[in-house]
Structures are given as structure tokens and as C-alpha cells.
Length: 267
Image (cartoon, rainbow, N blue to C red; front, side, top):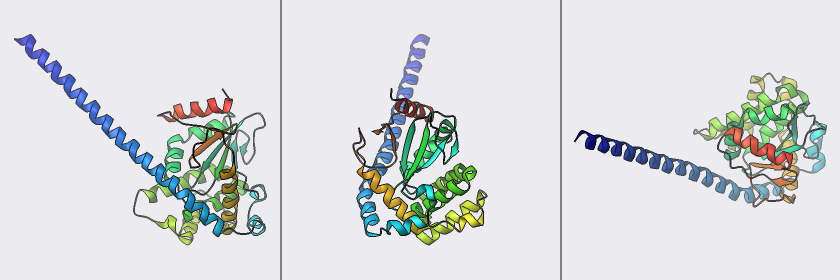
């Protein structure tokens, strides 16, 4: 009789464990569905964002005047073992396309922190950080204006500034704060973030959102027109190496970095 009771207990325990696994699987699926839904919304927003860029395009000459020289043709911000703004000639390039108001970009960048930039600084690749327009939020323009100036004028502060820009959007996106929809409010937030990481007032005064809009227009046009292999859709976040879209399947930061390294190596 005692053996029968023990068996029943064991069976009940197994049943309970099975129920918990099933419940967790359903929860995980719901989470994946939320992320997928977010990406779908972002993809749908691309067409609207690109129309916005075309309609509100500054002339290239006026846009270039307000940009640091190395970014006047829409070039990315480089992070490498040589520092910010300098490529390592012995490393391959990994391009990260993102929008500062893209929720999926923000989540991915935060999840990969600090591995993504640490691996670049270790010399395993040149990380080319390329802001583009997909979500079309005003904060994307203001944040890009700040990022370009800080990368050029205070490169030692850029990575801390980049993290702070990402964190601020995440805070707003997960609350009822909608400052990122307004350009003036976004300018103020970016200036405050810059002060918080030690950027000088002279550099902050050089944050030019008109120039940044022109930069984003150029970068987005180039990105959309690029014939990227294995690309099934034009959407952010996107990683590209050797002109090939990288499909990420890893479920940890370490696994994703391993996938990126494999793609960069060309194997």
C-alpha cells in the first residue's frame, strides 16, 4: 500500500512538473508573439517613415554644413579596437542598422550590452553603428544629432552616451512618457543626457537636428537601396556582414555574439 502511495505521489509530481512546463511554454510563446507583433508594427512604419524623409528632406548642402566632416555622406559611427571613429584595418566590418525610437532595436542593444561593443574593442570586428529611419520618432533625429557630434568631438564618451540614449528611450517607451514624439522635447532630453555623461556645453551647442535629418535621409536611402543578400525585408534592427543579412537565432547574448562572429568570419 505504501508503494502505491509513493507511486501516486511521483505521478502527481510529474504531472505538476509537466503542467508547469506547459504553462512556461505558453508564457514564452506569448512573449515571442509580443516581440513579433512589435516587429510587424515597425516594419509597417517603414513606408511611412521613408515618405516622411522624402517630403522633409533638407538639401544635401545645408545638411552637410552642420555635420562633423566624417559623417557628411551618411557614414556610420565606427567602434573598433582603435577607438571610436577609427577602423581597425585588420578586422572585418559588422554593420548594425538601427533607429533610436525602434523598440526592437532598443531591446536588442540592451540585451547585447556590453558584449557587442566589447567584442569590437577586442578587435574581432569593426562595429559600424548606422542610424536610419524606420519608426520615425523625433527622438531619433535628436539622438542622432548628439551621437554624431559626440563620436567626433568626444569619442571617449560616446559609448556611455549611446547607452544613456538607449536607456532613456526604453524608460519612456515602457511608461506614459511620450517626449520622444516631440522634437523640441527630444532636443532637451538629449542635451540633458549629454551633460550627464560629461559632454561639454560647446559640443552640446553643436547638436544640429536639421543636419541630422539630412544625415538620416542619406543613410536611409542608401540602406533601403542596398542589395543585401539574404534580406527578406527592410527593417531594423539589422546586422550585415560581407553584404549579407545576419539572421539571429540565439537565445542568450553570448549565443548571438557567436552568430555575429561566425558571420563576420565568413564561415
